[in-house]
Amino acid sequence: MELFFLFVLLALASYRLTRLITRDKLPLIDIPREAFVQRWGAYQDTKRVKSAETGRWWRWWWGSEFESVDGEHRTNLVMKSLAYLWECDWCMGIWVAGGLVFTTAQFVDTPYPYLQWLAAAAATGWLASREKQ
Image (cartoon, rainbow, N blue to C red):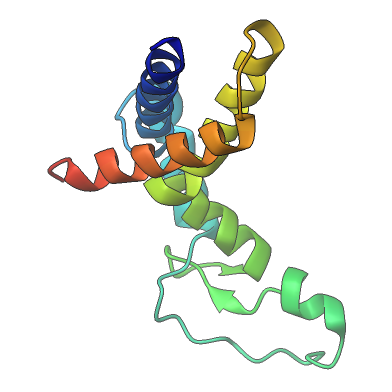
């Protein structure tokens, strides 16, 4: 019973923290999130902008090869992925759940921490998908 209660607490805490990070309108989080996504994010159907040095391996990750959401800047694959992560409940949920399970394991005997992590992340994504937009 104690294990089930621990899982429920981890899943609900993970869901709430994930929602705070990805969608809540608290100005302390909303303003930096929106500024970051506008500057570094890119729409899914954004085509790559060809650059002069496409033959170099690091250009794939760090080269400014995508047009950002605001249309004034260019972004790269790493920053585009971070902007997407900041707005995706499923993506951010696994990191939040991992941090919560790790922190909980430091103070409470948490059996099967990796399974708790994955289950809490799945519950977070499922709860987020059930919520009305």
